[in-house]
Length: 175
Image 1 (cartoon, rainbow, N blue to C red):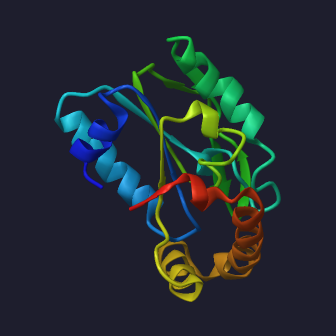
Image 2: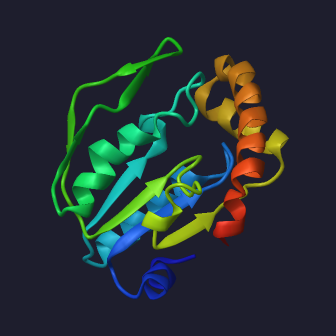
């Protein structure tokens, strides 16, 4: 889905777009391209990544923090401040505090971004499947190294169950 189609579905350059799907599907790459195209067209857009919050041991329970730190301030027209996770030696720790300037259009990218509890606050939900789980696993291992293979296999098992229970894909438009 191109930037023009996203804007048409939104009715303009305002709102919240969630880009969801399983790990290794290409959500980050797609989101970066979408945001770059929107910015090149002169639109103010913020990109929020669930990877700044999720860990192997805490795949989705961190969500209230993302709402409190970014989504709620943006809903009020305020800038946001948050501490994204920084991974070192396979361990995630809070990084330095970052500022995120308010924008009328927000793209939230990552596993669980189109979750049922957040869906009422989104204006468009997109789903990127990215092929079979084995191919997605190999893409992530090629990108992040062999050390992620075992935790990613467990993560893929978790996300399959998460998506089934949450019925995430049912709320999304396939891209």
